[in-house]
Length: 140
Length: 140
DNA sequence: CAATATCCTTGATTCACTCAAGCAATAAGG
DNA sequence: CCTTATTGCTTGAGTGAATCAAGGATATTG
Image 1 (spheres, each protein chain N blue to C red):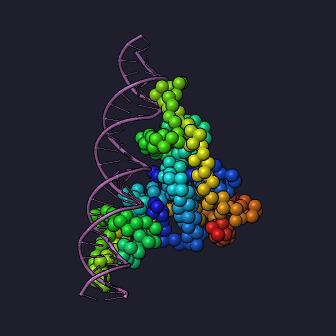
Image 2: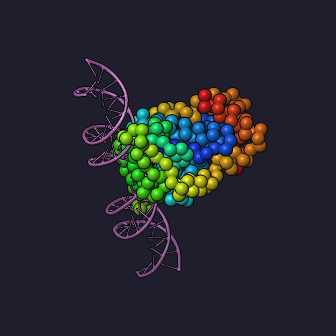
Image 3: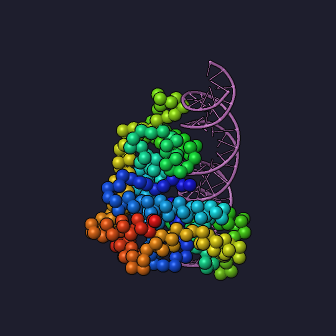
């Protein structure tokens, strides 16, 4: 498990609950990935291949170096979850696609990662709307 | 930057905002640590040494292997931010203490990590209470 | 068509993390 | 006491994520 990101000394209850939420979320994500023998990074990349796309696009979206993607995708490819085909339009580029097995694992991951669903499910529809509004405001 | 933990396909707006929050929080934490040339794990450990304590206590609280703590603390010690003194009561154990410089860096980190403070600060006191209550309920 | 920029990979390095082993010291049981 | 755990931490080996610097191949631009 990755160490939690916090807490810094919290000066309000709201901050403390915020930290708790993030911590529990992150751990749940990691645990769900682990159930499928994936690292969080692998689960993340796999989850972003609903449509085929290039490595560069992923790197930009995820805010990391392209070589990091190369390396993560190489492992996903070795696991048979992703293919990396040449792009006919541009032979420098590669197009990433989930294999059927990749689709299945991704789906199982989405099922295993219940945290967000469960948490939101504890709230009534009205409360869900309130929460959404409050978090949007807090995010600025 | 660590890759984000998500999104899984979100089925509700609330889930999507939740993911956003976690993502922005985690990135802000990492960025604040980076400002002080700390890794998130180092910032985390440093932040939990308000009182002197042993390695085992930390490992348990953080839910990781003791050897992980050994290694992170070794780096913090090499940076002069933490000392690892023998425990007079139990000579197997070590007592971790922040050095004055460790205190200063920790304080600067807490100052640099504005995200939670800022986010909560965008809400009125009433809204903060609502958010706290909603998140507590969502966390179950 | 030459210079430049883009897409990705490789190699080197650092750090986080885990597991298995082991050492040293304390605690427990005969 | 004195063996036998058990506890607290470290070491070593291994994996993976991440970054940076360099480079190869293809596109694009002047």
